[in-house]
Image 1: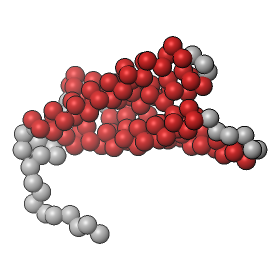
Image 2 (image 1 turned 135 degrees about the vertical axis):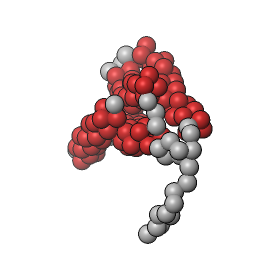
Image 3 (image 1 turned 90 degrees about the vertical axis):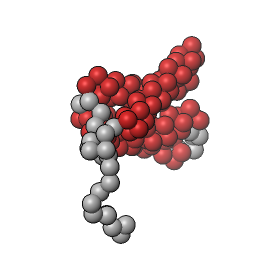
Image 4 (image 1 turned 180 degrees about the horizontal axis):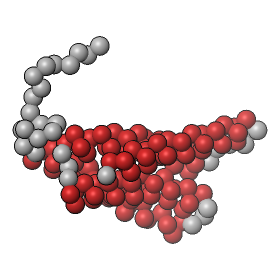
Length: 139
């Protein structure tokens, strides 16, 4: 179930890069880049990086079953919903969609709170729990 998180993260980064190139084209011909485009671009980039991290964190923390499905679905919905509503709502003039940003944001927050819960309640012998016998170098 972590494959969708990782794949969504890489797709989001590729999409963000395409948008970044488009922004460069706008700047190159003297046209300014609208603020809504910049905001969506930044959000998609950061949240996509977090999707990749989540793809590794979910199994490392030992999130399984319905919670694993919830974390994955909520995170991906929020990853695309937050920048998507900015681009579609503001960019396409469909301002009535803008309040849904709160729903997408709540989806991201809920997935993070599930991860927090699993982090705090996992057994010490669970994957990602306890202490390592060997310390890792910081180099």
